[in-house]
Image (tube, rainbow, N blue to C red; front, side):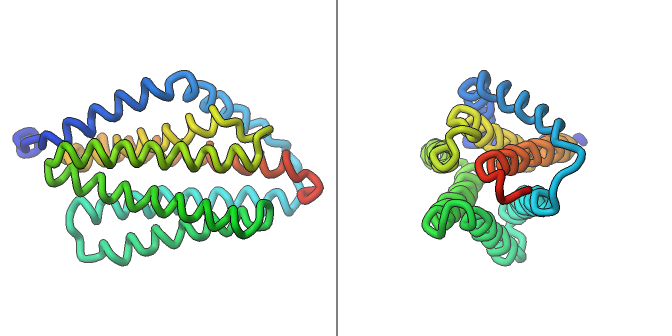
Length: 228
């Protein structure tokens, strides 16, 4: 405990912590809406078709893989672990899997576009971690801006595909909440605050399941004939 308290906090890490507060302010009103939307997901009918059950289970698995492999990649990247390359490769494969999951609904081009944006989401996150570790404040600010812009493009792509059920403000708030919680996780690890690190991941896991539910709800709502 005392050893951790004596560790210096890099200037870039201070900027990363500031990002958390900024992103909370940016998404505050939308974040409340997204949280309320997530609560509504608990009202899923007791009896659903086998096709809808398969969709929901598959969507949950994809996004749980996303946060699980992101966490493992964060650990590897912050410790220069020898498994970094293999872990990041597995995480990038998950982005392809997510893109493939929407192809039956929106076509191959949309699936490839989503995969490309999600892969950028991972690559920029890795660059952001590297900047924080190096104490490069200028690079950190650049990567923060890239990461937020990428999240907004992901939200825009999804809401354009399904504007009735994936409303732009809700999708943007959900994506920015994901960034904020992942930032909390990275900051905690760089500070060696392991209790906060665990709490951050628990929050990430809950939030990503809300996102998965939001996506599943939207697909069922937009394509009801496929899930009867």
